[in-house]
Length: 98
Image (cartoon, rainbow, N blue to C red; front, side):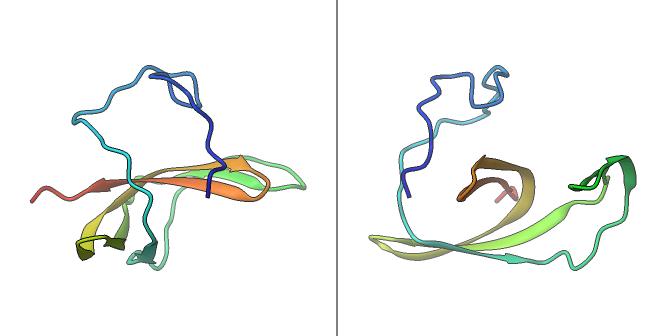
C-alpha cells in the first residue's frame, strides 16, 4: 500500500517530529487485535456526519508483523489514527517498554 505522502520531518499534520527513537523503512504484512473492548469519554462536538470525543483510557493492541526473518508480536497502545485518503487509514502504535 503506497498511499502515503513523503512528508519530510514534519509529518502530515504539520507538527514537529517528536520521535524518541530512530526508525527504519519496513513494508510487511501486519495484523492488529484490539484488546480494549469499550471506551468511555466526553464528546467535543457532533454533526450529522459524525462525532468527536476524547478519552483518557488507553486503546490497548497486539500486533503481529511478518518480517523476512519471521513473525514478531508486539504489544502497545494506539496513539493516533488518521485518515490518509478515502481508501487508506494510518495507525500509530506506541510499543510497551521491553
